[in-house]
Image (cartoon, rainbow, N blue to C red; front, side, top):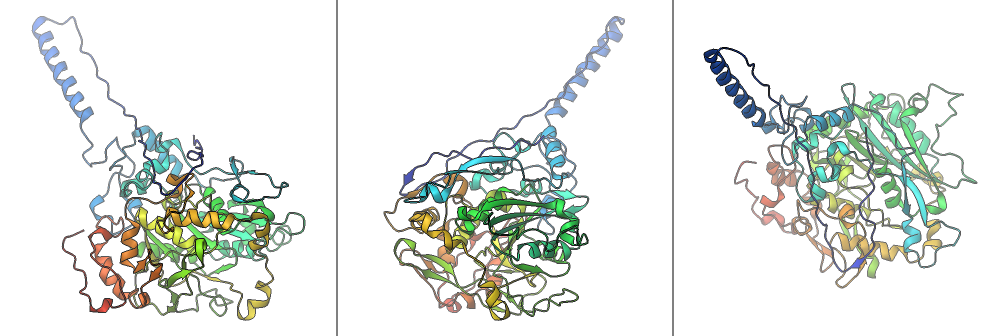
Length: 570
């Protein structure tokens, strides 16, 4: 039976700097029993039998203590027949036994396997009460707003041990997760790996059509579960995230056929404090799916997108790969009849600079270049993470939940999530071909998209919140101004990992945090050069790129530097 766990300590504090604490997971073990010999036999025969019995008992005892011959540890597993040393060839979850730092016993492994073959699991009635972050940080919040709200609990289960799933997965980023631990996260329906799709919508009439497109264009809609954060005015707005047409009028809509796989969490519009908190709620609705995808509420998908994106993710041969980018505009990109992709170029994330002033100054990704892919048969590495499209293994969402305490933050969201993911060992790629396209407020869609309200309409009732939130955001990722104090509540849950340092990220990609400047020309390096420089350091077990072994610091004259050489096999 699955047991939900409450989040970490809610004690609030302010410090100039802080770091995660540590705790220890516990596991239980089982032992084998022994049998006794017969009595009442003649002396010689009896003595012989006694010797035989003693030998048998000693042998059984030795076997009970011996490790499994396949190196699994902690007992047998249905996934024990594999070659762990070659996990870069295919996703680790297909063939990794239980080993590494965590050794579930037979009972727990059976519970995990049962969990992984239970789909869909819903996030509907399992709620907990939290403090609304906007009201918490506001200088003068309206008295009519309740400081507390009920939200879905984070998914967790005792099957992964007394410390919970995040403790099992690398102990809150204190170490890189192992292929075996990654293999134990992610559900199936039949033989299909499941996909979790998170959509945050603010009073957006395109929400329902986006959900329809998710299911209608999929080859295997049965493996998809969609979770929607629908923020709307309950008094005046229609239900924008409902099927495009009522199901009783048009039951053949894909949304109607798969409505049982859709969870919608409704939020009153005036309680909306931006995309970070909305997507935080979306991460709370994850329930153990194999893959986790995040998109906006005004997106359309290409035919067969689910098979396509999974294939491209696997081509990276990297369990820690995240396919992520700013999506291209939808106009002219999808064939209206076949729904095939007509857009042969793809964006790549390489442009970033500081913007804003004072305490609100932050690193922001700008408009990104796009063009035909220069690398074929695999996705291309790039340095930054994008909120509008993210596709990864489910453990990415488990390890990196959106920060609950960043209300009224819009710009700065992506560098926060990107740095946290980097510090946990994740690598960012752009897909060779796009599987969905975005409705921007440009060209033919400009007039209609400009009419969609934005969460900024709530700014007056959350005065002073943005400064406090931005100080927390920058403080946690080590980009704050010297002497700034920030709220460190739940920093272990929403902070940095220790697999990689942020300093390594900054020097690798030419970001000078003290001067708040960036090196020019990074886009000339991202693409083929970055792939040839860094991809040889992909670990042989497929668990991310070992940046600690790469001696490279980007600067605008990088072409004059010697290419790093792989000095030892990984």
